[in-house]
Image 1 (cartoon, rainbow, N blue to C red):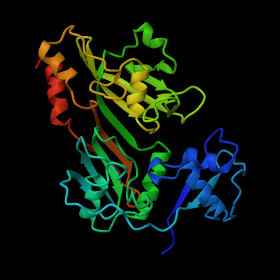
Image 2 (cartoon, one colour):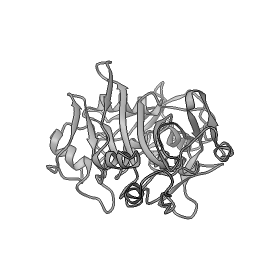
Image 3 (cartoon, rainbow, N blue to C red):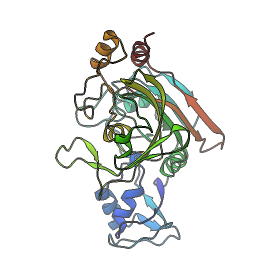
Image 4 (tube, rainbow, N blue to C red):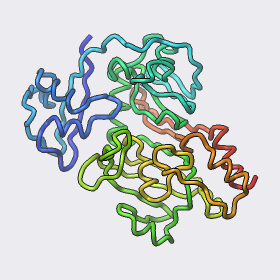
Length: 341
């Protein structure tokens, strides 16, 4: 069997050298860092679409160019299969859609070698996961944070992995998240209008644009950076206003970067309730909500974020698929309390 091959299309304004340009467009789930791509280029594993092998890291690229990256045969998986219950929304021969609970890490990493979604999928799928993600990320096409709940699709075949990764890279997969945030984002708010990267669109939609990169001093955090990082756009619309103190918002992604919604909402001054990293230890003020609601919000144990809908074209059958997942119990309780129910 031949090695899995990723098809990467160069975007606008590419970096001046091949390894950087490919790293900028590689899907996050492919685990293709710039250093790994550099090694693949030098080893002859990267070709132009016409089959020309290129081994120079400083090779120039141009918008629209297509490059093929042979990522290597899957290595033996460090993670062991574990019989962990999964809430399966859909499954067929090529892919599986999961409603992930809070507290579950998607793939093994230092400090989380077991109990992950990958461990659970290895057991459930019994060897039928795509190997493109490498030894720690078999089948993983995208991810959501440990304490974010909701929908995630994994590939069971390399063909499905390629097709899904292409859709996520092209931003054609439809992903909506529900979040409970501090304050109420409003187009009538002059402070919000003055935040860099914030724009107001029709039908009450607020657009947040800002490159996301590693925080300059706190390396475990991401941040909006003006002249570095990866381009990111989040749109949102308020679903429910809780007396000006908080709001339930619908967020959807034009891009998919690490912690994107959490970083962009915090940048806009409306961080997620319960977010231990980007919340700034902010506490909910008692305005038009009950003391009980304030107490519940201030004691919330995770970022109040849920991947509520997921839509994409099935990479093998071509059918359009769309899935929804109800709010988990802790967020339902939070919303009902804030609403005075």
